[in-house]
Length: 223
Image 1 (tube, rainbow, N blue to C red):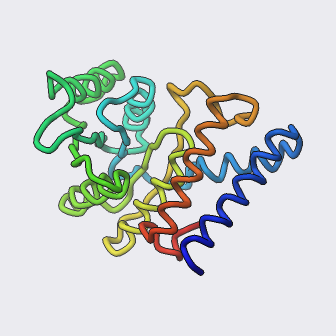
Image 2: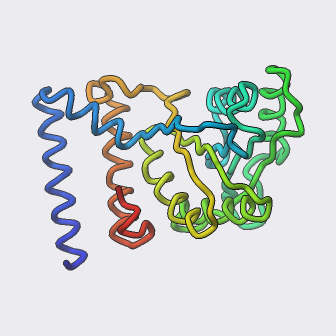
């Protein structure tokens, strides 16, 4: 199938979703669609080696608190926060240690060792999520990590999970996705009734389709 045809079908699918949103019906279908885009895998018998928290050039304190809580509760042993440099060789903040201090404070507030956290800076390079994931997986492979809890914001979680999963399989690193709406202007329940929820779902759905069409996510991982 030509790329043009794929985009046509993608547009048809998006139009169908928007029609459902406009009709205000099929609440169960829309909730299931939201859960698909925001996967949570809690099937972990023992503590994961690391919690990976995705960011851009900053991190939401609510997300940091959730990730730190997983370390505190024993769900994971350590925490890595992945941030993206806006320009090559530069950190986006006047104080490049600021994100690390935020994470350390969150761990300290929970009585955890502040050295259990680490910041990984990824280059700002298209495609951003894939580039960030490759940088992170290189670090995890070097450290011998085998099980990871991946915390991603909102409906971005599905695309992020599939990218990390495809990169992790040959390295024998298992990824457990954990979508979080902490710090968001909307939640998972009845997201279709909120402007920010609809915007996030449609935007991330299109980006997921783009990654699949471009082959950034191998076909066998695209579900």
